[in-house]
Length: 275
Image (cartoon, rainbow, N blue to C red; front, side, top):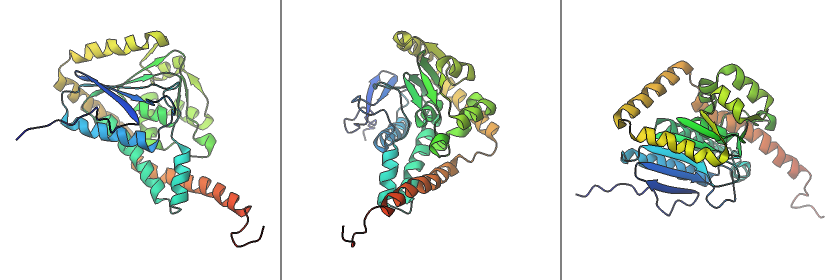
C-alpha cells in the first residue's frame, strides 16, 4: 500500500499562493493583487492547508505573507452582509465566524514554526491572524489598527483577544482596542506584536535569517517547545472564552447589519404598493 502525502500546492487552492521549498512552505495571501481582505475562500484554503500539514512532517517552517499592497485589511464585511441576507437567523454568519476560530487554532497548534512577514496595513482580522504566528517580522513602514469597536463590533474575530493580551499585555491592548488608534511598527515592536522590524527591502532577509537558523534545529525540540509555550499561554489565559467569540460577533453583526437592512427596506416601496 502506497503512503501518499497531501499535495500542498494543489492548483484547486486559488485564494492563496502556495510554494514549497524543501522544509519551508510559503503561503501568500492575495495572489492576484486584487483583494487584501480575509474572504471565506481565503479562510477555507488556509484551514485546508493547515489540516494537510498534519500528514506532512517534512514541512518544518511556514511563511505567511501577502502579494498585495497591504498584508491584510481585515475581514470581508460584504460577505457578512450577504450571509445575513441569505440566512436572517444568523446561522450562516456564525459558521463563518467559527471558521475564523478554527483557522487561528490550527495556526497556533501546527507543528511547523510559523513566521508572519508583514508590510503595509495590518488591520483587524489581519492583525489577529498574524498574532497567532510564532514569529512576526514587519517592515518599518507598517501600520496597525484594531478598528472593530469603532465599527460597532466586538474585537472577536478568531478568538484573538486572549492571544493579543498574552503577547502584548492587557493594558496596552485594552487601550488600542477601545480607542481604535493606528500604531506604527516601532510601537508594535515595543509591545511584542513584532519581533523584528526592518526596511521593506530587507524584510525578506530578516525572515530568511530566522529560517536558516530554525531548519538547523532539532525538529522534535522545536515541536515540543512550541507545545510547551502554547500550554503556558493557555494556562495564563485561565478562563479562555474564545470559543464564544463567534457567537458574540454573530449577535453583534446580526444587530448592526440587520438594522441597516431593515432601515433600507423601511424606506423602499412595498412590493404590492403602486409607485
